[in-house]
Amino acid sequence: MTPVVECLVAFLFGSVVGLLMQRSRFCNTAALRDAIMFKTYRNTKAMLMAMMILTVGFTGFMSLGGGHPMQFDVGLNTFAGLFLFGIGMVLAGACTVSTWVKTGEGNLGALWALLFTFVGMFLFSLAWSWNWWPPAPQTMTGEPNLPALQLGFANARTLQDKLGVPAIVFGLVQFAVLLAIYRAILRRERAQQAKHEQHQQETAGQQA
Image (cartoon, rainbow, N blue to C red; front, side, top):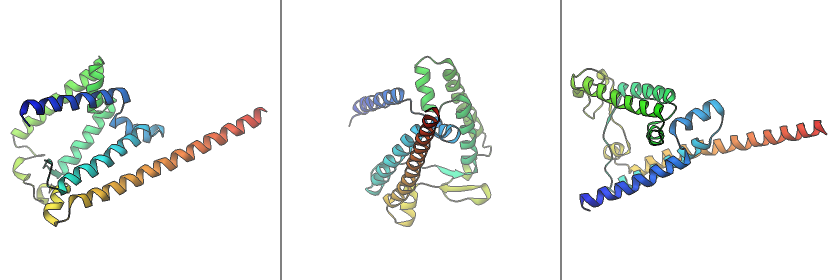
């Protein structure tokens, strides 16, 4: 596949995904926020379903020797970054993908959030180039480095290479966990629906 064809395929795929994201109003932030604060699970179920499909798909490709999984170190800086990023998503009211979509729709608040996302990335690159910790490049070698609070590479491909266990095995374990969460949400929704119907019946009985 030539670079031109790869660009055209990427453009087509990105356009389709962008259209689906815009029309479905899917948002990772809403998937977690709505489940915790409002006890509604529309986006949560969509996120879990996507994660299950991608988990099996990616680990299946890895097991067959295909794909190009990212290699990145996991450490204290990872958890700190996730925490700060989560706060930013809540304050912005959307995840990064939804911010792009809202910016395309003309939302000025989303535009500012997107702009300062790049500002934050630039400031992080400065901290990286000055070898500050976290994270200092010399401590991130892909191997566990406990004094530097680094756990090394951590993904299904790493486990496959080190343990000799196909990545799909770890993918199926994660799939089972996600499926259990999905089924628990369905049970909770059925219980909420039954409670709502019971309340409606009681109200109707009182009015009669």
